[in-house]
Image (tube, rainbow, N blue to C red):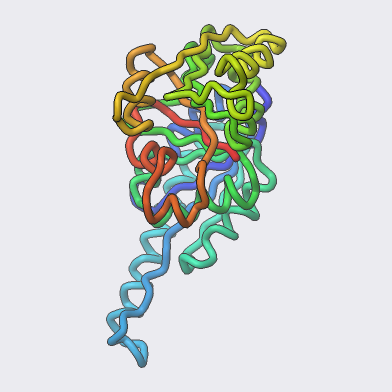
Amino acid sequence: MLFKTLLAVVGSDGAEADIARAIDLAGRLDAHLSVLVVDLAVPPGIGDYPVGVVWLDERVADMQALNTAADRVQILCEASGLPFDLSRYYTERAFLADNVFQRALYSDLVIVGDKTGADARLLTEIVDGAVFEAQRPLLLLPKNHTAALPVKTVLVAWNSRAEAGRAVREAIDILTNAETVHVVLVDPDASYHHNGGEPGAEVAAFLDRHGVKVTIDQLPSGGRPVEDVLRAHAVEIGADLIVMGAYGHSRLRERIFGGVTHALLETTPVPVLLAR
């Protein structure tokens, strides 16, 4: 595998559960594990000016919880015998994405477990810093799932856009070693200006040249949201992983109106690899 430096971003709540799966993956990849333990500072309320004692006490308690979680994570990493480094940040929300960006620059893959991913505030900033700013792939591990290696069945969500192409290139080593790769197009536009005369054929040919075993699945939505079609098909084919581009529209539009990426970040039946 090409992933030799993994960055695990974990929140102070549930850090031990999330880091355990990151350690497992790093061990199987023989990779260096870089760990970032984070929590968001409590902003003062409107009635807290001048700053009150209660707000300061909350911040002190949060920092103590963060340090306790980071100390436990360090113990687990040391016990694993893996090469690792660990940093901890208690930061304002406006600065978290930049903190993740600075660390993700020197990583091949960013890992987020379900405990950290359940905090929408944390996940949004992690995705911004890792996927958009550092342009590194991010692996989201849902509850009760580890990253299967080697990956047997992969679902590639394809829409002929740049972000989908980047995701495929970032995951090419995984795809090459998979038993089956399903390139999935939902309600494909069979025009030469979009998906080509035969939707999925060109990306299938590209993957085939890399030795990837490809199946093209053209699926009708039947009026259902695209994310529901992808979730159901992932379960139907027994996918171990979904590979997809992060956000098809602007991030602001996704946050206001939702979207396929946002929906899969919230609920996914299998691990998801995002890239842009």
